[in-house]
Amino acid sequence: MSEPGQRPGWDSPNGAPPQPPGYAAGGPHQPYQQFSQYPQWQPPVPPKKTSPAAIVLIVGSVVVVILMALAFLAWGYPGFLREPDAKGAIGTSPATSATVASPTPVTTVPSVPAAQPGGARAPLPKRTKPLADPVTCAFTPDPASPAPKKVAPPPDGPASSSGTARVSLATSAGDIGLTLDRALAPCTVVNFLSLVKQGFYDGTACHRLSVTSGLQMLQCGDPVGDGTGGPGYTIRDEVFPELTYGRGVLAMAKTAEPDSGGSQFFLVFGNVQISPEYTVFGSIDDAGLGVLDNVARGGIDPARPGIGDGSGPPKIPVTFTQVTTP
Image (cartoon, rainbow, N blue to C red):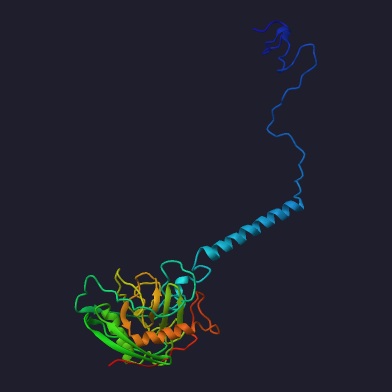
């Protein structure tokens, strides 16, 4: 019950209405927070102006980051913005043809010309486990790399893995005799003899000479003449871990892909330090090594473009006038 003189619902003494918090009787009214669903209006704060110095610093930082990224891509990933070094050791550029490519030295060596071509002949590598006799060969058409010079691939089928065959390279620089070894690479020998008998190599020139330490060889067998040509088909690799590439060795060129050889080959006249992924299929006679030494002494022709690794067309041309086998 409310006392007389007090409004119902007022519990304060003397019937006075309840006062808000912070109210002091007989004193000045203290402010208190009023709650509302709308936030109090605040005057807008103008945005701070960016100083010219700050703008220059930001733009300069962006430019530096872009330049660093481009430099990293250009020199940090060979083969992305620049051509891989492996393109040119012994064969075709994979970017233009999937026929034959070049081996790259296993270790990084300076591009220093050989002091003097020549020296002792290296022994041919040997398989620790002889191949079956016969073996089965297969030759795969390569539609992406049509032959600029019409030639038929050898028939698929058995090939002997014993015996040797002689081939004579009559060139503008002198005669080079080869002995092909079927025990090392029977299918590669079958392919090489087939190309010789069809006159595929006649009139072609050796397009690449390297006299740098770790890669001393002459590369031949490209009907185009720039390292991109082949016979229009590929052959299987015939490699084994014991392969080495010393003076006097005859081996096939290919791209970085396996089983991509065709017609290009290289003649080793000095030191070659490469991984054992290039098929060795024969040797070079002493007279032929003398011809290669003379070509090596002539050096690279500076008037003709190379591939940027210190190799290039020889100054003394080596053109096959006739390639024959007995």
